[in-house]
Image (tube, rainbow, N blue to C red; front, side, top):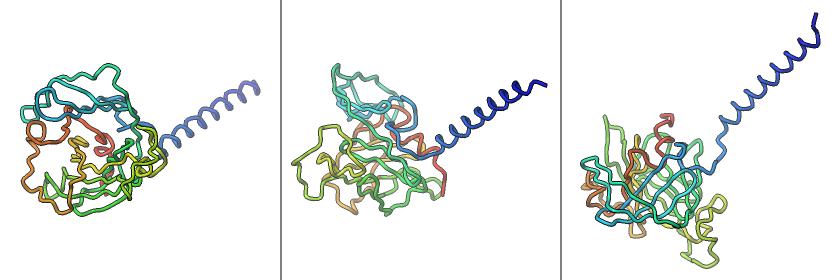
Length: 242
């Protein structure tokens, strides 16, 4: 009997089982990673309406500002290619998702939505940002599928002294960098974040009943998504309903 050979095979199988078990455990942990959407390196471009519009582009764990030829034509579904300025500096994007939220953070904004239903009036905190669901823009069978969110990362005293390096994502509180802004963003259950804009002017209770999703890329003053899927899209579509 080849006892030594059996022991070798047994040891190899044990190591293999241990390796698979470790891989499973690590993959199931909700540790944050420097990635924006769990969508690999998919490109996500947001642009303003009009010719020669400017915008921002996200890819993997970074984003940068762009100058482009024209805004997306959302109503017709046409997409006009855009190009990034050579040498444009890039900034990090951090995946801050948790069991409660699908989340992406830059040095100035936090995009975060609940993994459960979009409930108008809901308030929560993610990465130090105060977030609220301000209104529903599209419902299906009584369930909100597209909603407007407000995310406030502004420093409490409004001070800009002692700012962190531009682009730096520091700790778990977006307010401490001194660069945080208040932003409005529209999140769709299938497409992720489809539009956003700085919104220091926003007042709770603002009427959005006449907002038209079909005009976001042609007339509304928001950075509108060019591609089919945007920030948070994979996390939202794969989120468990509660």
